[in-house]
Image (cartoon, one colour):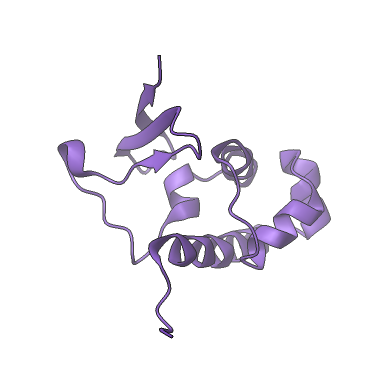
Length: 118
């Protein structure tokens, strides 16, 4: 049995640490962040514990509530952004859509390429 985490597990744990760090940096309780984002306290707590893999919609609400970009929330030493068709892409569980970051800048704005199934 191996102790190595798969890519998804690494992303979930990175997200957990980033969310907790950003929440505390903003001096927010779980309840305060829930009020600010519209995401339940239970869901935020599960994300911070690395016990759930949230949807892109939930992550988007949290990032906006914290005033950070989606990629800041997902930032990981394990993730490398590449150019062209080789860059990091977020896929829906049912493969009906995919998002790929094109530009992230210091003004806290992002541009994504979205691919939607017909």
